[in-house]
Image (tube, rainbow, N blue to C red; front, side, top):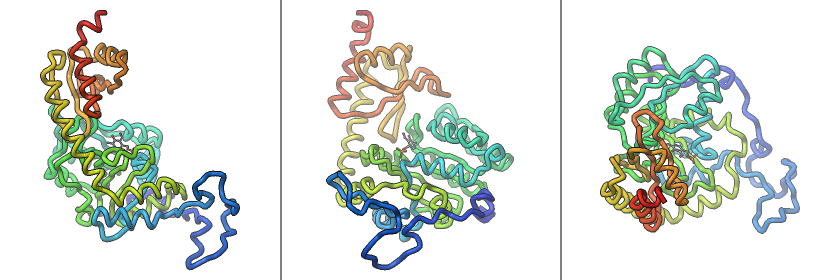
Length: 356
Ligand SMILES: Cc1ncc(COP(=O)(O)O)c(C=O)c1O
């Protein structure tokens, strides 16, 4: 990137003063907190929750930085799910009604939803039919249209594939846009994370989440990793207490035993192999797409009917057949062995049960 980051930030955001929360003005030891209109008597809950959480989540960011082997916790942003980071990136950099961002269809739907909410024009440079990046198309469009942000999802949702690092590197080098690589599913993949390269590319932001491999979608914790300057812009515009104390405590506790997450990832990958191999053998299934995520696409002759049939059997999958290059496809999340077996059994009995 040849332009300073500050020139990409919206002018109103660059100029504004951030909300100073009660504890911001103060540092050092204190005995009595009468500054934030909290309830000093405690809360009716069994947990201590009467105090506001740390707005900058220092302890949690330090712990996550250590876990990710990043030297500086200030290169870590924490959001209420990674969706918050996606939205904040748009709000920080894209002037509504004026600026553009780029996506590559088919991909995660929230990029477009957030773009619509923020009135940011979407430039879509679709993936090729085999779901690989149209690298030349992306670079050409980025150089011509100068989008503020380029969203690259790898492994991609819904196709499950990882993009070639060389292609992403070409894009990073060829553009002044901020390039966001969404690695929500990276733990299920053999590919290396881009986190280790945030110091190399000033226009790189990497997003990860506790919702997938960590199995903690309920706590709503997402992460963005980038240079300190960009992280401080996101921290400036987020809601002051976006990460609640319950989430912070549970995640701090969980980070003490990452081995359990590794074990679950190993099992999910094993189940992914089992489910894909079994489904390939089911006559109803026309094609199963390779995947480096905890889901995969499977193609059917009549996906709407199969989708309705599975719902009737109490099995919910995602119908992606309306998306580009996904004709006939249902997206299937890898479940437990029992769930996967029941899915295959239902698919095997489609003809007789559907007619019944
Ligand atoms: C590619 C991708 N990014 C981000 C998210 C959002 O994750 P979170 O739960 O952290 O908001 C999802 C959720 O499905 C996703 O598929």
